[in-house]
Image 1: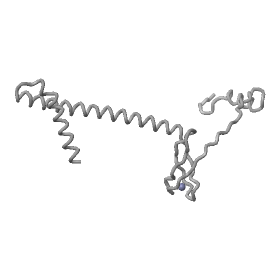
Image 2: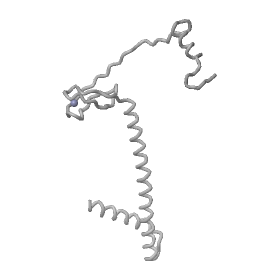
Image 3: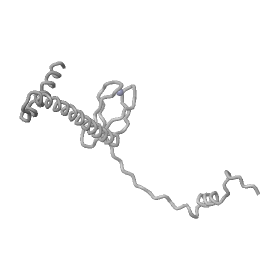
Image 4: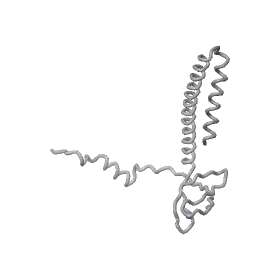
Length: 146
Ligand SMILES: [Zn+2]
């Protein structure tokens, strides 16, 4: 830890010296240049880290969203029968470790198909007539007093 801090300070001062030395002629100007260059490096580093963190957080959020849309809840086959949310993929094994019993669990994905149907029109049926009558009845919530 201390070694890394000393290394970072040495690198900071070395870069400041390399960038300042060719442009200065006096000792006082050189020191001013080193101080300004060091402060600039610290500011630029902090700006870079801030934008880098925003980028990393954004990428992690997108990954989490993707995992959530491709995941499902499964029940562990152990005696605890606890539910876990796991990411599901069709291109790789979906094995996971149960958070409650620490055992490896294999997951197989099964795809089923169903025929879709269109709803039947209600006009002419008893239920359709009943709905039409209910729609034409005055609303009970309004206080209609004659
Ligand atoms: Zn389990």
